[in-house]
Length: 504
Image (cartoon, rainbow, N blue to C red; front, side, top):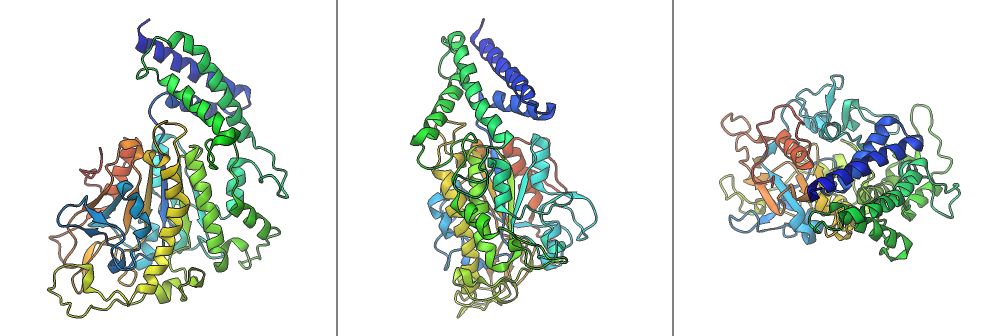
């Protein structure tokens, strides 16, 4: 039998046996089919993951925009713009793309545009069905995204300021990192008050991990004459053996597959602190929506996202910390002041000597005026970097030996507006002559499908009333991410095409 036919036959055998194993363990037919596809995919290209991260109230461009050296958009710095909101990402710059010259098309009065910014829907109502890019990509790939929150709406309930993610109707994010952890990893860690039992899903993954290793070993005799390049099943076996080795003590402290539960002390802290949480009728003292608890909820949600991405248990997820118009006091980040009305609404001031006809530069705004707001937004960057980006960039991908998890992931970081005080939904030149773009960033290479390490730049609007200069629609970026994820049939409203120079 020709080598490539041997490989194809072996992969099909593995896929079928995965399906039968899943059925024997009581899985539904769709779930067993997904597992069989996972087995088949594991013998081929690395699995891709996506994470959508939202920060409220835009940014301050004089503290955000990357510093580009000359005209080379691949030669830039993220940590040389005053407070440098993007500064924590500088060590991972080769993974980062910063997008300038995009707009959210359609209606949306200031923060009200949160209801359509991720979908491309042009209305500002909250009744018309729409689907956000995470769900569109998930449906195209047969994946159900998980949406998490950290105080993502008011205690009394979700109004339009919390309606960021949609799947026909608004999605209420999972508020509890404890519930999110238990749903994936099967109960509390050892030593907690919970039973610590492993869920059926986790037990299934444990059984399948051993099952696939033994199955592939039986195929080695048949495939022993294949070259290393052709023998993808051998690569998969080596990956599984590496995972087993890691899980027995040599793994460097991180979770390497869903067969083992990660130890997340921050989850257990929330479990203990929220025990007996009582939700009062009409809102009230719900632990998971209290302003003072926001930072202690965000960290475990981010840590859980990172671990789920590492083991590819949830290939697509989203996280919404706070909500539009949220006025939490940021004293916890050493930035006293309410985030929305005080910090984000701080009016920028021209720098000394700056004029309307000055060269376009962030130097045209006084950096001290909005330093507090910039420090608040920097806090979000630091959380994302420390608990997700750094972890993925330094963790070997258990499903793709020789790569890091961030190589096969795309993190999409966005906000509902551009400038926090201007409330713009376009990328424009602010008076006096300061470039201001929607904060749109990707981090990761999506399995090599994204060309990263660049500022992706299109013309900014110089006159809001002009019809001759327009931005690229943000849905072009959604389409590009979808293509990079392998969702070739995904579509979005109002697109003009994928972004050349971003797709490999």
